[in-house]
Each structure stands twice: as structure tokens, then as C-alpha cells.
Length: 184
Image (cartoon, rainbow, N blue to C red; front, side, top):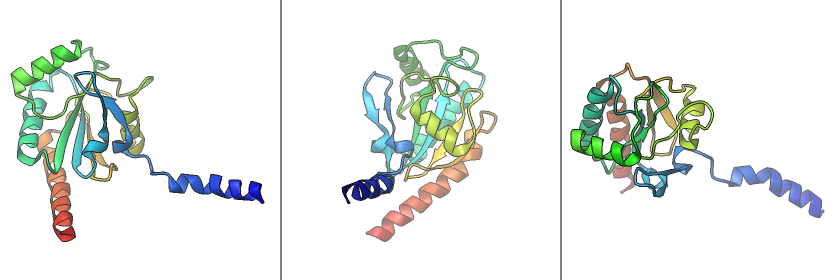
């Protein structure tokens, strides 16, 4: 009897546990503090692997900051994850990266510690993004659109501009705002 009960509980346990999603991950921010991505749950997120010395850097950082200014921080956030895997184009320390993006682009969106976004040693948040979208970054400035529940909606490579992605983000933010109004 006890064995049957334990087996039932064991089989039911996965359905009782919260399903894993993007926001269930913990990451280290650019200043070295462990942060739960749970704090972004309920908002739309654009997760991006960034680099300071890439040909895409200037256009992307300017557009990402404008997007954050236009839509954030209550319903939307850009979450930037520096990565040095592609062309060694993010060689600096976290402190140097933060100083560069704050001075050059006046970045106000959350920045995280430098990570691996593909291959061996991939960060758990990016592992989720890759598995959910079926797209693994092969260069800097991959963009993953995550809904308020932590599910990946779409992803785009670096050749796709932030301006091309913006209508998808705006639509998700619009739906989120309407849903919140309905709940009042």
C-alpha cells in the first residue's frame, strides 16, 4: 500500500512542480551578484548575447537602448548577456564592459556577467532559450523574445535588426497591457 502511494506521488510530482522556463533560471549580474530571473516574470523580455567589439555593436546597442527607453521597464526589458565566444569580440572584464556600454550608449537595461551562450558550458538560461527555440547562437547579438510566462516566442540572428524585431515585441507588450487592464 505504502509502495503504491509512493509510486503515485513520484509519478505525480513532475506535474506538481513548476514547469521550467526562462525566468526559473538564476544568473550573475555584471557586478557579480546572483540574480533570479523571476524578477522579470510578468514582463516581456528580449534576451540578447552582446559584444563590445563586433560590427553589429553600435547599431544594436543604440537600438536596444531606444527599445528599453520606449517600452521598459514595467512591461518590457532587454536583458544583455556579454559573450566572448564569437571572434573574441568581448575580451574585457565585466567592469570594463559595463563602463563601455554605460559611457558609450548610456545603457539602462540589465547587464549580466560574461557567459557562454553555446556549446560546452552554455549558461542554463541560454540553454533553455536554445532548446525552446531550436536556434543556437553562432555569432553575437542573437535575440530571443520571451513572453511574460517565460516561454520563448521567437528568435533572430544578428543580421535581423532590432527595428525588424520591434513589431513583435510591441504586439506582446500590447497584449500584456490589455490583459492587465482586464484583470483590474
